[in-house]
Length: 570
Image 1 (tube, rainbow, N blue to C red):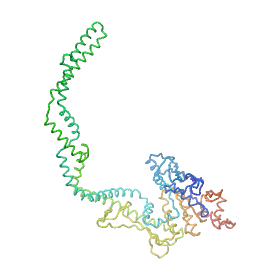
Image 2: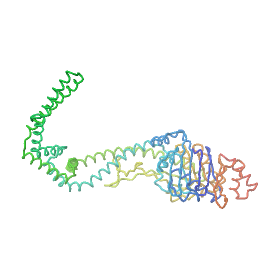
Image 3: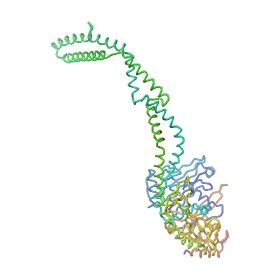
Image 4: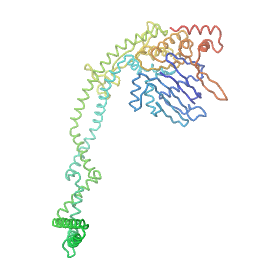
């Protein structure tokens, strides 16, 4: 439920801060006072589209903030955890709208997206604006009402999982078929490219090794010259490094005989002699292996040239060339096995059609059972709301799938049916408001006032199964007479046993039944128009109901009638 609401600098509202209670709350006020602005502001909080034009003149930004009690609402906790937010029993939702058109959303003071705000709002609040009940006139919404009444959400989720898998495989098959001609056209090209690449047979890392070997073969003369010079310098010349080190070591040994502190230096010189010997041997061994091989050099050059040509054609690097070969190899294999892949896919699709069809058939059974119960509940509620002779039908039908249909379909009982995310069923509500008349589609027979009452009847039927904590009705009394208004008010009052209900109304018969009553007032101060919301005490409530009965001038008779209405709460 909503505990409090703060609205600042929104349209005609400078600042409104209001605390709400559980039960049935009504909001009344003269036409144009700003009742609809309240609903629009609440819509902002629920993720509706924002417009900078709604920022109050002279202000930089508008702010709407709501504090909600979400104790025990697991779906809210799940949404918060999924978005790495901490869940608690209190939820603070805020929306800020700047005069520049930017909008920011916060949940518990953490920035969130509008999409997340809307997801949370859909769980917390069911808001029916002046025209929202017209959704009843669109048959595609009827299945949602029936499913909410039936309460078989897990069955729908189970079916939907199979349907999503079926949709994905159907799309994959369609893509595969679209690729068939393209793959066949490329098959010859793939074969040529593979043949050309495989004739060279590039191997990962070989280019680096070939370049190293080529460099050595191209420099054999220089290598011979350098290794010979090093050996001569270190070992063979009259003034070789080896001889010089040997002389120095002998002299150092003599020093050591006199002063022991030179013993370490002697060891160092011996080590240097050994190192020179090792280097000299290594250079000699390397020199003995040097061989100029023009045939091998030419072979390497040709190999590197062939690799270079392939790299330029197929990727720019040896790694890219090898990756390209693997890719076209897979595509060629796929093209050669296309019929087998398609047949495998069709088998999987066929199995999923049967699986989804079985789940859809089980859903149909449950929907037909729920439809009968909903029909009785709605007819009973409509009678209470002044449509005594109503006949209400929730028709559940299926459409056979057309031969060769591109859209996903499912199979049940050997028959194919058009399918969607909710199953194979199409639900439509039919109504007759007069005895003896055949029920017709709701859109063709319901007047504005009747649609409002049908919506209320449905909400009453859904009251126990609908888990939305807050229901808001904006002028649900449209087209409703005073006599029926009493029944509408009683229905709203009964709904408040299971939900927090807020209703904006013009009818005294509805306002009289409220647990809490607010009045919207529009005042002009310092040449500025401001909308305010005021909670009425007991005496003020009586006067407000009397004003709704008789107009601006409140009479004693009007006050007596108002008190009588307020006493009729059952």
